[in-house]
Image (tube, rainbow, N blue to C red; front, side, top):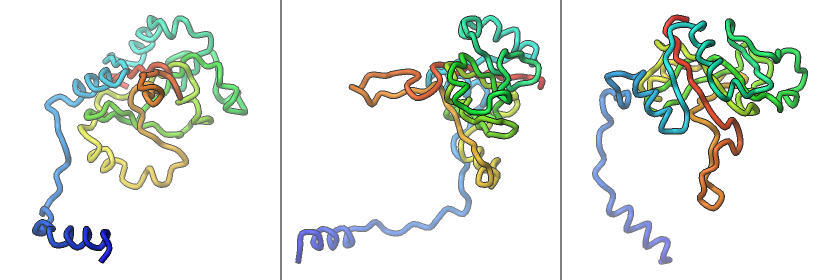
Amino acid sequence: MSSRDTILKRVRANQPAPLELPSHLTHGVTFADPRAQFLTVLEMVGGRGVVVEDVAAAERYLRELPVVQDAKVIVSLVDGIVGNREINDCPEPHELADVGVAICAGQFGVAENGAIWVTDENLKHRAIYFICQHLVVLVKASEIVANMHLAYERLGSAFVNRGFSAFISGPSKTADIEQSLVIGAQGPRSLTVVLVERW
């Protein structure tokens, strides 16, 4: 008998007793205040978040952000927030390479990991989420679910039939190179999430 067969025989002989599946599946961790948890986790993963009253307040907040003040090219995909580059005027996504700030709308957020669900709905170039230097995402403050179980339950099969959709959590980062954390290695250098109370 080979060593492999001996090992497999011993593993089979030492299996734990089978357990019945639970009658109902739990839906993961929950939070007393999912919105506060979302903002806490978002900060932990390198992003920043703020709660504002409405889109007008969001625009006032963004005008004060240094990354917005310093940006030469701003793309806004949110009605009520002004940019200076129209994404639909760019036939190719490569023409967005000089975008300093992109302002987009997210569908909902997830409290347990600070992620935001984004799609290509009414969006000509999905590359905008990743090619810009700084990404700003507005989300309705009421649209925060506690965990990924509830997020996928909410989505149902909607994401299967989409051309593009993704969860984004924090700015782009990697620590693969010499175990040194690099922010913005493959995408935006910052992520700001604006939770809008009335939208």
